[in-house]
Image (cartoon, rainbow, N blue to C red):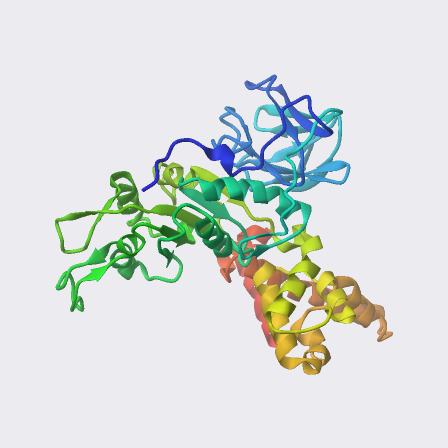
Length: 442
């Protein structure tokens, strides 16, 4: 297996050194890291916290591992609290998400960050690529990622690919494999969320005949199957706690032992992982081993959701349109409808939408209000056009908002009511009440 030398900078957006180009800088103006500074350039977001994987790493014990994220939005910075223990303040006001500009102060724990206008700052150069393997995108957010992915593909280090459901994490992993030095070897996928914990150890490491009831023959695990190539562990954040030390041992020894055997089998492979979860939070809360975390996260890349790369919606839709055998340009009305949608299911949802469009044609357009939720403004306009009394119109608008909010938050959290309720700030009992009411109305 590949070595785990600390090369994390390969896969995180490179922060520009102070003294080049234009943009913003964050400077620690109070706290034990006072004087440290980070230049912000390019469209990608950066992370601030105690974790070694953050671009601005702080030693303040009151700061969470991944405390907040900052990304450029026009001539401002969007500051987003990442569910930190002690909260984030902008100019003395506690925030979940807020815009900040030059001179504003961001407080986290005992640390104060001052936003400075960088007259001579620049971010990493944008690639001329519009695709990386099967990963398609021409937006600035994606073009800033491509140089990092190229360097990752040329290396052999373990790496973690993060992103919401449907952003294309497996596509990225496969592209890294296909463009890397192990391209002639196998690309094997193990999905932690799809394999029951009782079978996961056998799937990972294999078993000998008679190792357990039902083991009628010897079977190689995915580690052996991936020998000479790449093992992609999908949804690694869902790996059962009992298996985490066994996976760590296999990575440290570069060898596995089948169930029912005493013989260690060497494995020469590269490990790529993906997760929709916040692994830093999982480590912080004791659900994921920190030693395994650092073994896997030598490199790290975060895929932006489709709503943060809206310039790619038409590009991707056209790509899927062509891949499905369609000739001519994308229909104008369809393009407009696609660009208005928020895409909580990201690229996967867009791909499925295009498949339905091609399969159903005009029937799809007639059913668009059912299959593809209209933009919020369109939905409100439709309610207003009915000339209803104010209380009735307000209730319809409220119901429409609740329905779309529930659809989106549940999709983002894999259908888990518990995680969706926590993320939305709604008590689980009340969340279930709203969900049940929406189901009755549907």
